[in-house]
Image (cartoon, rainbow, N blue to C red; front, side):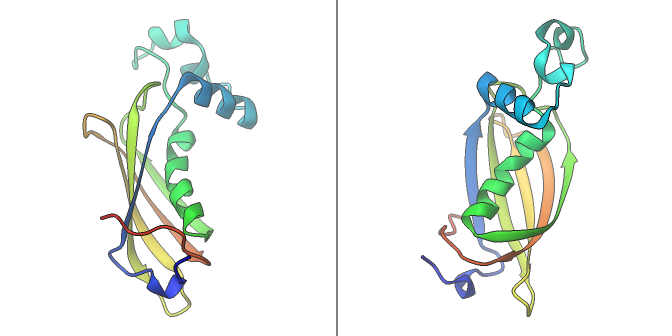
Length: 138
């Protein structure tokens, strides 16, 4: 295990995931988010998206995966959803540590791109890393 003091400004952590129909069904069932854009194939086909989309916060959970691996106790998260994520899309989430203050509170910039390198989410988080388990890969 890496000591939190070894987490540095500029460190980047990356996680990639392909979202499946099962992921969407489980998320919607767990959260009660029964939005027809996520679950109703016929409705979604006639929408501006043309097919079902992955819930935004399910996509956002990629950064919580990284934060969890870093042992971050969350304080704040912000999201800008820029483009839809479709079932079957592969999203790469990059989290870059922008600052660590004197209390050990980290501020991170988050970028999520699909398999076509289109930016789908810009985000950020502020939290206190308690324990680091990942090695920077960027």
